[in-house]
Length: 593
Image 1: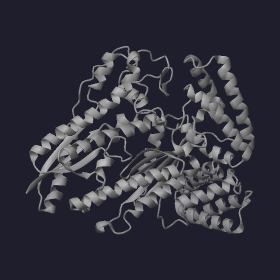
Image 2: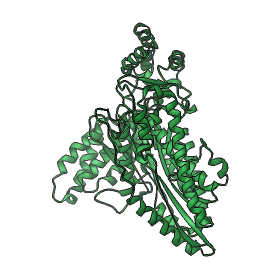
Image 3: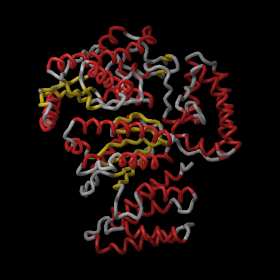
């Protein structure tokens, strides 16, 4: 009996996810894309299709709007006949468009008086949703035919995407472009004024197109933690261990409750941040001027009253800093992705195997969300083998390791004898909260690509790796990358970095040592035959290490010297790499809670 295999692709990923100024923009764009994909999957199921990707044993409840079940933007299903397929494709497209319009309506209901209706309507109907579908027949009694159909339908969808529709955009002169991505015109009448809708806002001078408005003002009262709240989390956890510090946090919370009631600052709904469930910027006196200006312009407080309130908070913060000094607000953004997933899927030949594979990935996505929250982080998205999360610096390594171990556990029992078990590559970018959020994501994506692709001069150890990029303000990034199971290392990269971080936190290793390694590396940079001076490099590095005010135990000191010898391998680049490892560990150690 002939059946049909359909694949659907939904987009655009860039517009929905990547373009963002606030953490909530980034999260809601991802959430919105998942909900649209979920609506497509729901329509396929209601039209008589049997879903393969996504799949779970409780699909009816998982595909409900707002469920925790994430759906990727690629969907695979089988159908009894071609007529049903064609109708299902139309129904799925309608489902995607209706889900998008439901988000639009929620945003419009609070903004109708402050927007240009003609621009709004034009952008609503101007091809926001990219929907591509293709199908191919196969013999239901022959699994080899199914495998061929899957390959064919993938090629068809790829070909269709290459011929995607390019609609001419009717730009409006003298209208500001969106602050998020600069692509579309702002739909707001007055971009200079702040806008408050419920507990969500647009700052003065920020212009938003339709998609930007939907990201910012749709989605109900989900209070997403800001990057600053995540960045200050280690400091708050340290203070909470001290009775006086914990009381001061509570006193500031009581003041913030009134400020949040008047929408001067936002609350955080995630239980992970119960210790201080408010916007983190209130804990940074350098940000108070901006808070004062917003409060006065929106009429929530007069200038004298809000200044007095914030002055009271600032006094309490100064006492908190005496208990434990505050570090600059840096945070980590993590992006993880499965390795060789396409190869693994291609080795699975039956629909039953693909459904089980899909269910396993859905299970991992649920675990990943729990892992991130246990590490005091917040998920931007968890879908299949993809994870993106914001994390406090001190928990980033633990989160990466737990994600890696959880992903590996899927394949422990020999999943259908896949020849090469998939692994997880993880990229982490550590950056200041004042950096552009889109830039943060780009650096994290760059780190993830580094983890997957390996070093430029050595592609033999691609994938199955952790890569970290440290980007301080005004300086070039400092990268480090290593495979999780590198047999040449004394310890896995995450354990080693944590070892260094703890020793730096306890001031057992002076900070200057890492930077003096750079000076040593420069001495050997122009040697034509570096192997001849390999021993000299090791001696120079060890001499500097031994001269420093080292407070390690004898066992730790011996292990460190042994590790240094193993890492200096005849090239000045190996010294640079060791220096990078130590510098990154210093930053991690500075935020140990």
